[in-house]
Length: 165
Image 1 (cartoon, rainbow, N blue to C red):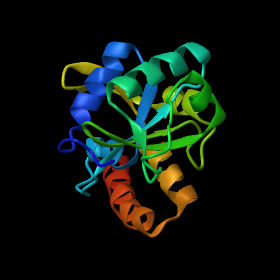
Image 2: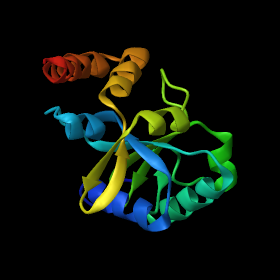
Image 3: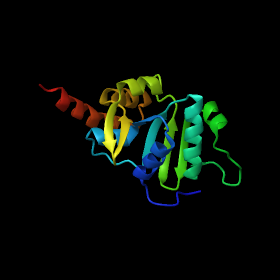
Image 4: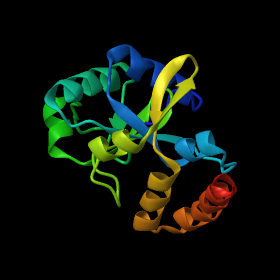
């Protein structure tokens, strides 16, 4: 399966918001919201793993027609609370582009920690939790992929600018 439309993270966020899903934006878009100019082609969130939230997230994912990336299209896959409880990292293709849901991102203790440190930002009229710059840097350091190394240069430069008196 490929995505049905152009990448539209705002459409995904509106749907999550409408379903009452508890999440923190992480990854490239969080970096963009802090001032990074690096281009990203997916939306990454860390989600609360409590049972009620897993039900809400599953409902939102089904409305998005989410399908696991690189999963054989001929095999059935059900996105439900049980599937989400069993895994930590899910990479989906949706009607609005690529969408990654992480229960415990590298370098963190998961949603509760990220939420406690997050910044509340207005995104398209929705109050939304965005990972703090410090947490983004910590996640990029822990993941340590080549693309994370590039992002770290930018995120640390933003951090230095903010730390100046």
